[in-house]
Image 1 (spheres, rainbow over the protein chains, first blue to last red):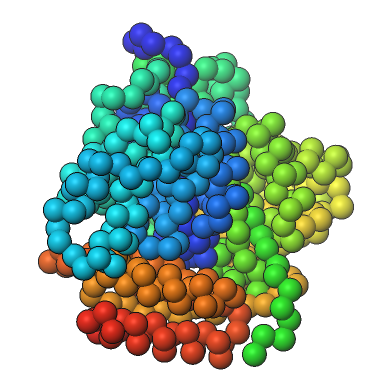
Image 2: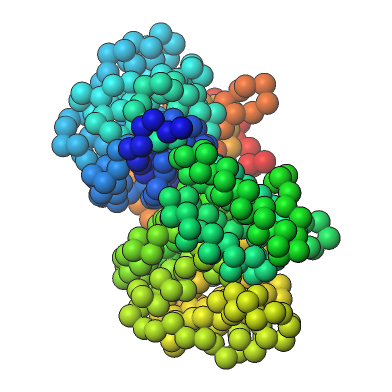
Length: 252
Length: 252
């Protein structure tokens, strides 16, 4: 089924002290992974970094060298702690410039000079960057090279990411199939490992869960790019569950 | 107020394809950060890594060298994809051994040989490791050197982490104070940056939020180890909000 078997990978860099301190629960990693997964781009690494210039620059340069795409979230607002644009410019060794399109958009809404100066911080992009549309009405994100710089607010991040649909080059799309069973992991561990060994191109994971009432169950998750192989392997998972005395269920 | 001013840092390593694929929303990073923050240990870095031995080994060795503590979550169950113990042993260059205390606990619940063999995978720890209690009844976690290895299931992770209370050496505890205002960030960006420059030892962050009805507001968050300085700075934040035409509110 898969026509393009190249594996395309991405790193997600979550920028912000508020995530590391525990003040804010990140949800952007999951959203990005699910969205770009459907485009044939796999998140294989994520980093959470503080608002520290040297750290952001080093991490961005490290991950952009080893992935097809890098997506950053956070740090592109108008305040002193919003340093992502500065850091990306440093990482690419280019000056930070005021983008005329963004500046014109920001200037449409009048404001006293001091407030306008703060808002115009959001017009600064690394020289040569392209823009990432923001349908929520705020300033756009930007991209340079393979690095896509988006807002931290989930609704704004989602708008920006959505605008990239169809614009990035994905590879083989990973398809997921799951089967649940009301048995502990250990009961099916051995035959499941044997099955994994038979299907090296399918990634098989076992995840315990706890239902109401305290009963433990297991979700068996199969991921691969070839749907027909995946369907065969899933039917084998159902068989091994039955052989272990369980009832295979579709995951709830 | 702070009696111990040493800064003690930690890295969190979240292990698991299910987090990177977006199948599972991680909540352990936030829980760990909030909990160990009260012990005077700051999370300054987090990594999300796949179930790939070479990656886990490299990342653990990288972060354990530069932090006082490392906390890992995930990959310590009984199935073939649970490779964390193997990876930590490799990272420390020690053999993986069956821990008699864990093995005895696991053997108490009878099972057919094949299932017992799978469950005994959870008794394997790097040679020299100590145990992390697990009050949920399952097998314990373990620690070796400065690396603390915990389960991925949030309730089990929390039980393990809770058992470490009072056993780790923290430094200065970071205290947080917040003020909210129903003004956009840009309106207070300039005076807030000026205040930050006056208080280099306090970390000041500005976080926009959206209330019901679509109105944007801003949370100003101050973090520091000296409570009396923090209280003075917070009163100055309230003053700058009033000067900007806003009403300072306690965060909801």
